[in-house]
Image 1 (cartoon, rainbow, N blue to C red):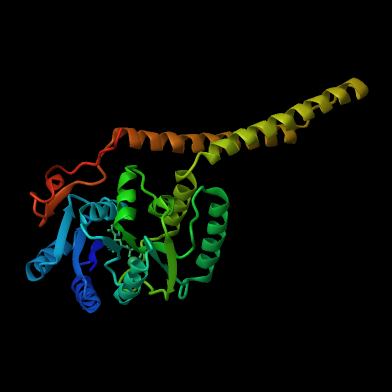
Image 2 (cartoon, rainbow, N blue to C red; image 1 turned 45 degrees about the vertical axis):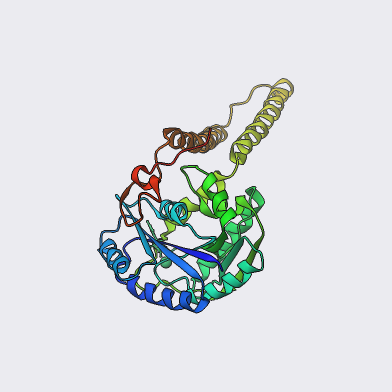
Length: 323
Ligand code: UDP
Ligand code: MG
């Protein structure tokens, strides 16, 4: 028998949480496995914690952790994975966008020996422009990053114990989890499900957030942007040297002409812009180093119903790094 843990990050989900919990429990009962549900309240402001405390009072399979403020979904998933004790862990959203009906299928594939069973959503119901940009982005990032990222794949997945342990060894502060999941490897299998559009509220993925997330993906996995800066620099130096030789040759053969004002301005602004971009890239990496060296915890716990004797770490939860 598999001991299953569900990890559910919740941020302002008070309205749907009990509906979600009922649906989840129905599916879990159908699988016949023992389970626990670890809800992580990511500093919600709408009574999500109250709802979780209530659920925990009614259902002894419910564990909850509550953060002192909103630390983001990545931190919530990390906390959930840390405190999940099952042989297999399923990460799910609380807003019913990840259908609990798929749990049975995930378990089947897990029992066949896969360490990561990954649910891939179709892009049904997404705006065409968004689909186009997503496709283009994944094409680019897979040419670029050291890990392979798949379009439509998110955090909805089942992880075996060794996969979870692998993830927990990655202590970085900047957690680009799509990449981390790919980085750990292990036997993985994808299966597709139909996209459930976000209904209750606007998606938190504004254009700007998507752009920032996209840049994160490009910068999180290697230092290729810095390499690119070197190559562009070398190329420009070569072009400038060639141009200088040409100007000198023309001056010797035909005498000195008035230099072109437009050429000069274009070169100055163009090069200035390029330098700013390169500085920005370097700055991004330094910024990351800055955050990592602070060694701040990923989150602070405010409240939990986990037994401190079984989970001594809850009393003084701090992310540490092996040296
Ligand atoms: N979430 C979270 N912390 C946040 C934002 C979101 O724990 O700061 C949770 C949220 O409650 C939900 C999941 O992460 O269970 C996905 O969030 P959302 O539906 O807003 O994102 P999307 O479906 O657009 O990816
Ligand atoms: Mg959602």
